[in-house]
Length: 203
Image (cartoon, rainbow, N blue to C red):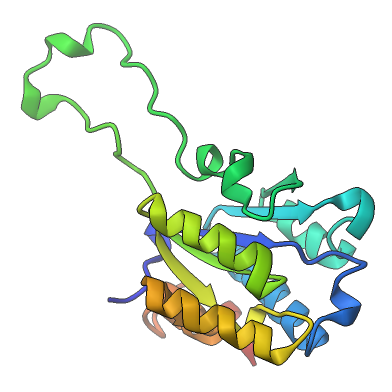
């Protein structure tokens, strides 16, 4: 199964100013998060972000936050480790709108299903991988989203904690990918109009 841009949403977890300096391979992790935000903007993929306890850990790194906002993204401030406990699910899967007009009088085959247009694949990356990222991703899986974890854009303070999160997520049914895998699966072809811009981002 390949990742489809038209079915994707991007979720960036807690790249905060007081946290990133202590993350293992933090600069590379942050660089890939920035690429993901730019790639999502190129492909018109919705972008969401979170900040854990921003009064304690500060806001997201300004350069990344600017890219999130340029992509039309929203940021959820939270205190729970899983963003799903703070209402993220309603952002990712908004409640179905009430039918307009007298829709119930339409024949069944003309009625739109409630889930029409829903994007079910959540491409997720962030910090710390073994705390906020893993708890959010497991809750997403429980809520029947398809979860794609971008491993080279995830971090923890230690490599062991980060890798333990990946093992657990793979065992739970998440797909483990890299930033470049996301890029090339979103465009699928060198003939895609965004291919050259995408290639420039990953080189």
